[in-house]
Length: 287
Image (cartoon, rainbow, N blue to C red; front, side, top):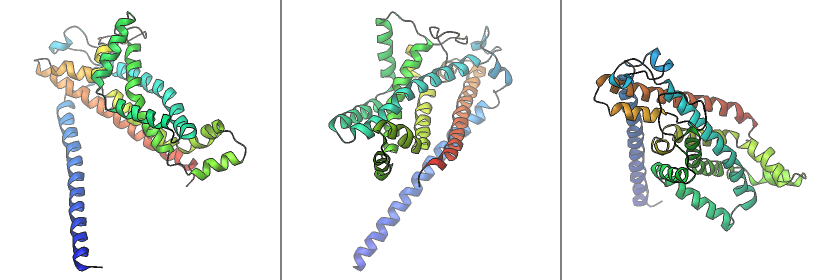
């Protein structure tokens, strides 16, 4: 090899290695700074009352109460939205790869999903608000679930679609050769092989949904009570953080960081649980 060309490649490799290390340090330090801020400011204000009580009179003036309404509301909203998105996303992802494949229809659907993925959540909220006005609906848990499902749908479908593409074509061909239909192959072979990837896709969508505030602000509203019906308003942790940070009372602002800490812990627990479940299910994957 030409010595000059060899030196140039070594220099290029060194440059990209330095950029890689810098990117890693930047990402880890950003995460560490965020966690340090949330923990240092939120942990002192975190107590059992915040986890087990709803806001009482004068809560936003620094008096007693908690954010149980926002915790349960977030789980209701995101859990319902994620479940609704799964019911649409998995069949659509299997259809794109098993039936449509590289057709123009499949490419058009993927392009549409990519565009929907990049749309700001405030647009989803405004869209849902317009639909609710047309149907004469008020802010409710149902409205928030539907909008969060629309928000999570493109994320979930595209992530599942990319995972399904990694399945060896010979596996599908072998299933069809044994007499299985495309539907049976999609459900019993492909879906089983991509279970860990499906869980990862659901986690990505869930993380986006539980941390979103703009879409549920217009559709789910906010209330100090725990929702007892799909047609009642529901609180959420992101909005609890937003409203409490906007108050001039230091005690309430510290509670906002405590709410952010609770939200971070919920996402962390779900992430660890999904990794454990993915590891258990990976034994069914053909290596």
